[in-house]
Length: 199
Image (cartoon, rainbow, N blue to C red; front, top):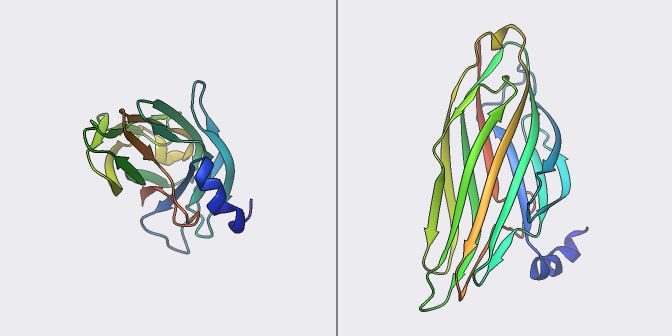
């Protein structure tokens, strides 16, 4: 896929970019390592590409076909392996969603629901209630979630592997549509920020 084709692709499918960026990047600090991003069973999206960021703390994932039109309910389940370096723990995670929604007069609008899960121990335990944002008019949106992380016991002795899970549901009603997309693949439309600290 090249950038000349990008505009055409947006007209027939949705592009989802994910950037995972630490809030503090210090040259002396080791990088987070990310495994292959996978889409869970029953998802209405596909992983198109995966690009590592230059800062050692970021990952861009390009998803294809995540949108909902006129009464559709679409689901996207993402799973990413994360390897936290020894001597560091995750404090908090912020997730910013960007996209667009179109709502005709008389429509009940659209919504974007999301839930989170951490497993495998190295990320600690996520404390976040399920969240839903409803949209009743045409707009470009930016919704940010704050996830508190409780460090796993003994994590600092060896860092380790954890699994980050994000479950998204895009819901539309008659006369409405919602896209989690962007024309700028580098900007991304979901921004996940890890707040790391030394043990």
